[in-house]
Image 1: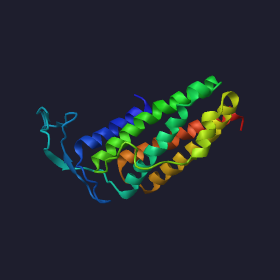
Image 2: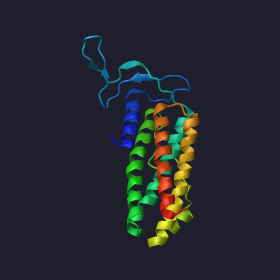
Image 3: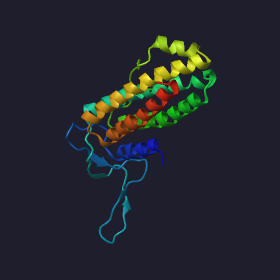
Image 4: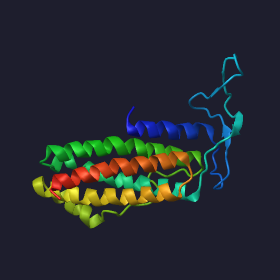
Length: 210
């Protein structure tokens, strides 16, 4: 299973069984069976397990959802969306097979992460509209316009330069979440961002010869 799939499984698992409102930091939230994937309740020694009834209370969650976790997800969704917007420009403008491959990898990693964070926010009572909360201007509108009009080698150099900065901002956001977050799913997501985008930063710098 790929890195993003592992995170998605963890977050969807949280969404299935937790209540709809975020618990105060340091307190658990009730585990309630949802209407999605079945939740199996283990039986006693020698007994078979059973499927929980939707709405059945199953105890208390060990997850701790705090304000830092919500801020991380609400900030990272539009940040990822801007990266996808940049990556979608690549096929028609790039002259580099390496850059096209990189853009495909960015899309493959970040689309599932957006879906996972959106699902997580819904599970803690912070559903997002279709815009993802707010704009991300790590790359300014003026820089995006320059990227849209560039072609060939000039496009590739600008794309890599801007994406390095974009990834560095994501690593900073994720590192903050690792320091201050309390929810296990969002901490796992932040760890994946730090490791995955850190590797891509090094790769992009190598492609630029830096």
